[in-house]
Length: 86
Length: 147
Image 1 (cartoon, rainbow over the protein chains, first blue to last red):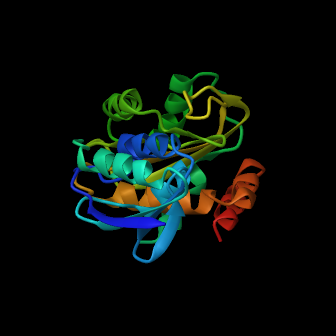
Image 2: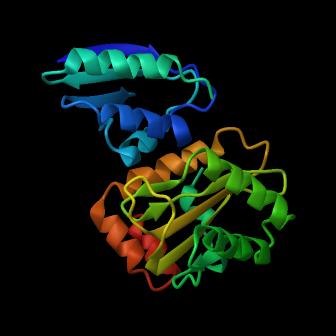
């Protein structure tokens, strides 16, 4: 299992379209992918779970990936979050 | 902020007549307007449809959470509706939406809509909550589903 911290810099945070993009990306991988905010882990492959965290601009979250393609999954998720513009 | 207080028995429908996505949005907006929580229906509808164009709020599992932030909104509210037949809402899983939450917040409401979305999503993760909402017969059933 690998994990990385990331700060959310896009104005919207993780809801609406950014959340759906993240969920779509996460579903491309076999690994289990979790997002942690404030000590709570949720499944990054479920839109309801991601929305439930209420991640907004400036929040720090931890991405965790566990599985055969965890490294690729982590790179893809971090890249997506860092390049969100809206 | 008590999100449950943002529901009202004046803004629930357990038998939406709409057959299309736009009709569903119109029907929900009409309830909001009749309850005096909206100054300008058209302006708010534009805000909601603009959001839908960017990203459909049909999030799957039969749920749609259309929302709009607009100066025509009097105060943050949630309008609730159920469609027994289901409505095509361009959902992420391609399935019809049955349970609708229209979230309306004023222009200056900062992160309020995020808190509401977060609350609703957290509750809807549970299958039994979704079932209770789908089978709700009155306002009390809706509120109790969240308890």
